[in-house]
Image (cartoon, rainbow over all chains, first blue to last red; front, side):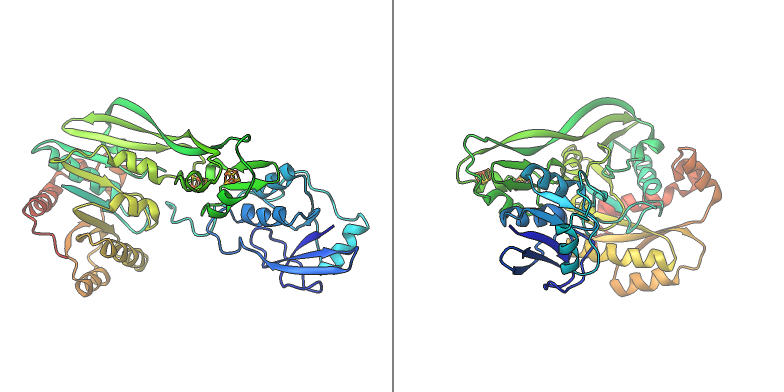
Length: 127
Length: 283
Ligand code: SF4
Ligand code: SF4
């Protein structure tokens, strides 16, 4: 089964990216057959709902777990309803985070740990 | 005629100018004041209307029929606002992101999507002397305001002078407000910051093809920055209002500029006469 990690580049040795909806890359790793693959994050340039778009991609890929730094409430809701487990506290590289996950060292998140975003830009506000 | 009063940023005195214009116009005949700053409406604090009507404004939001849906994912793919997520046996709708465009309904191959209504705010109307007053109030936490601005603008009565108080800035809500106006008044301050925001506002208004003019507010007599810019852009400076502590205090106490300084009324009257004669309409 595949595990997805938010990363700054598309490789198992890349540094993790603490952002979810705006992470550069998603690295999918399958330890059972030593297979990995990277996909660009489709949400990175979206003007709003980035986390939902990123979550949709991972739901479509049928991942079993997602390893993140921060994640907002909407993306979290998608994973919870899809029955995909989300773990926080990624650190170092993708490989290191996967290792921590398999050793049961990453905390299982039961809710968002980051507030909702209004998207990019969003216009001016009164002073 | 529809006249929009806008400014590149908040706090330039846009509302006190719009309210003053309405008050001066009301001395001659009926006029409408439409406060389109639905996120923070404040025109009523200066014009004190007696409220007469309140109407809820709703936007369509999709409802998915689980029995018809085959979870193909098409709706989530086409939604530009990522308001939908399709799971293996469920479709999640995030109403606060939905713009009610109807796209998902149109493209759903199973005809599984119908429309429901979601309230985003209300339009209130009232009367303040000869001024018919309308404003929109967006619900707290609501992100989508352009349909509400549209509902406020629907109240514009053809054949009457309609003054639109636009939201600050140059983003979608302002564009929604200013579009279709016959003239746009840009209120600015004679500072580098004021000029920066004015530049953006002028760019927007020119792109929309709406003739505009500038009112320099809180002028200390050092207006070269704005004057040079207006000359370069071929936009008239309509008039200046001096920096005035009494006016600022009046604003805080709910009084528009011309109520505090009746001597300023002719400036507004001249502007109205010019607009009526089409003289200010440089394109
Ligand atoms: S497009 Fe229609 S059938 Fe396909 S997932 Fe969406 S609601 Fe279901
Ligand atoms: S109506 Fe438009 S914005 Fe709303 S969910 Fe459907 S496609 Fe997205």
